[in-house]
Structures are given as C-alpha cells and as structure tokens.
Length: 235
Image (cartoon, rainbow, N blue to C red):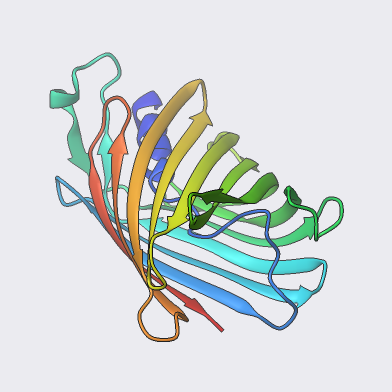
C-alpha cells in the first residue's frame, strides 16, 4: 500500500495549478490553462485549470488533473528498481478564492475553499480543500516580475490520505512577449514528501492573450524528470 501512496504523491506533485495565486481576477475576466506532460518512461498526465472573476472580491474556478501512468515505487529500493504500473489517478476541485485584506496592497493575500473528488484505486472519493496564498510584484533592474507562494490542505475519503502542498513561484518578464519562471513544488502525504524544481519559458505572441509554456520538472531527490507543454488563455 505504501508503494501506491508514494506513487500517488509523485504524480500529484507533478501536476500543480498553472496560475493559482493571491491575485484575484477582475470581474468578468477569466483564465484557462491546459497542459500535457510526459516522463522518461512514457508516463503521462493532463491538466485543466480555470479562473473567473465572479466579483471584485471573489474568483471561482476549477482545478483538474488526470494521470494515465504513474510510478510504482518499491519502498527501500533503489530508484533503478522502480517500475511502471498503469494505475490511473486524478483530482478535481471546484473552488472560490477571496482576498485577505485590501486588494490594492503590495503584498497580496488570499484564501480559497474547494470541494471535489479524487480518483484513486478505481473509485471517486469525496474531497475538500482549504488554501492560503501570498504574492507580490518584484523588480530586478529594469525587469518586472512576481513572486508567489501557494499552500493547500486537501482531505479525502479513505483510502486516500490528507495532502498538504506548498508551491513557490518566481517569474520575470524579459521582453514584451517572453517571460521566465522558476517553481518549486512540495507535497506531503502519509508521512512521505516529494519536491520538484520546474523552470519554464513563457511565450506570448501577438496581443498576449495566449501564452505557451515550455517547461521541465526535475525531482529534488528520486523520481523521473518530465517535460510539459502548456497553453494559457485569458478572456
């Protein structure tokens, strides 16, 4: 069972929200992100994320991930002993985000409440989530960017375990159409932890409403590296 739990942590650690954060969407404005990801051993995952400004102080959205193949880790074994097992898993949350404090302050704070389900061992398990985010704009020389920290606590029906995630993001605009971003994803579940570093190149041609994300995710310790292609759209 612990090998399956570790695999669950591994897969979910590689499927973070594309644009979660402390910034709320303007009323009537939205954002959609989709991505596909593949690992060295042909494991794959897809994700869908959206936000919509329902009001000046409330943003609603959905965060959905689905992994078609995950690693089956043998506890205590070297990573070379890891094998691929076709065990689809997934997670889906509908959420509402609210500001903490004035929305025009430099340091942005927000929290979110969510309900949904996890797909685990061929079952849909009810889940609930609570999250806290902080972010602010930054300037390095004549370049502008942002820094963001997202945390969440997700609890689901057995046999799934409570999950804590803490993700950090630093981004910087290089030109009008190009940005770079570095993220660190940390997941804690059932006494296990997993961390990944993820450098990204973001390219926004034309009017900038569509952004292409070219990214890799590199485990801090054991695990597989992966490549990801994402498309972000604002409306």
